Length: 487
Image (tube, rainbow, N blue to C red; front, side, top):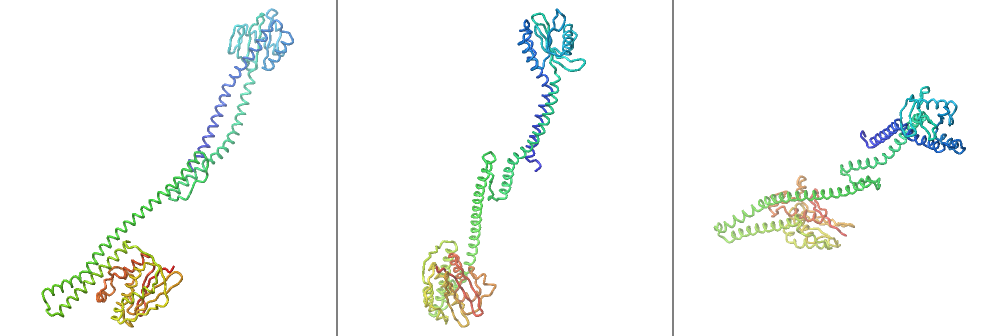
C-alpha cells in the first residue's frame, strides 16, 4: 500500500529520533562548554575561600591537604605571590606551571593579559583566557587575599572540548543503535496496529458485497477492538435490515403480481363468461319470444320450447355454480378441511349417483370395491374431483365405451385414476386443458353442455391440497389421475 500507516509511522518515528539527536548534538556542541564553565566557577571560589580563611595558617598540614584535595578534584592549579618578597611563595602546580602562573599573574597586575572577563568581585576576577604558546584555553581566577598577598588559579578548558567531541561521537553511535532498534520496534508495533485495521478494511469490502458472514476476530480492548465489535454489530444489523427489506420487497412483488394476476383473471373471466352466456341467453330469449308470439300453437311445440329454455337455464345455473366454486378455490376463500375417509366408498357413491347417465351413455364401469383404502384429505373437495373426472369420462366415451377406475396404494400415497376409452387428447392441447373455459372439441363440449370449467376446478382443488394430478394419453383412450396421502 503506497500510503500505509505502517510506513507513515516508521518515517515519523525515525524523523523524530533524528530530530532529537540533532537537537542534542547542537546543545552538546553549543552549550556544554558554557555549562562546564558555569560549574567550574564554584570550584575556583571554593579554593579561594580556603585560601582566604587559612591565610594566616596556610602551611598547616590540614589546610594543605584540603587544598590538595580540592585542587585535584577540580583540576585546578594555583599559586600565591608574596608582593613583599616579589616571588611565588606557595602553590599547587609543577615548577613549569608555577612559572606560567607567575607570568599570568604579572600580566593581570600590569593589565597586559588578553581574555574574556566572566565575573568580578571585590577581591577577585574570573577570566577565560588562551595561552599564546599552546593555544589552549583556561579558566583563570586572580585577586588579593586579606593579608595582602595575591593569588592566581587556573583550570584547563581543553578537556571539556575533548569531552564535547567524544560525547558527540558517542551520541552519534548511540543514535544509530536507537534508530535501528526503533525501526524494528516501530515495525512490530505498527504491524500489531495495522493488521486489525487491514482486517477491518477487508471486512468492510466483504460487507459492501453484502457478505455479512464475515466477523472481526482479532479482539482487543483498545479503540480498534471497540471498532471491530461495532463492525460486527453493524454487520448483524445490516444483515437483519437487508433481510427485512428483501422480505418486504418479495411480499410487495408478490402483491403486485397477485394484483396483476387478479386483474388479468378478472378481464379473462368477464370475457369468457360473456362468451359462454351469450349463446344460452340468446337461445332462451329466442324461444321465449317464440312462445310469446305463438309461433307454434300446438302443445308439443310449446313443450319443446319450454324444454330448451329450461335446459339452457340449467346449463347457465351449473356454470355459475362452478364459477363461484372455482373463484373461492383460486382466491383462497375455501378452507381445506382434512379428514380420514374411505376413498373407495366415496367413488362408489359417485358411481351410484350417476347410474342413470351411465345407462344413457351405454357405458361399462369397472371398479373394484372389495378393499377399503383410507386417505387424509378434504372429503367434499375430493368428491368434486372424482365427479369431474367421472363426468368428463362419460362425456368423452367412444369405442368400447369402458370406464376403468383404479385405486393404487403404497405406504405413503393412494393414486386414483379414471380411464375412458375414446380419442386421445391432442398433444398440443394437453398443457391447456386445465385452463378455464378451454375446450378441445368445442362442438362436442357444447353438445353435452360443458363449459370448460370442470378441470380448472380439479386443478384448483389439488393445488390447494398440494397434491399431484395429471393426465395420460393411451392409444385407445385417456386416463386422468390424482394422489392423496394415506398417512
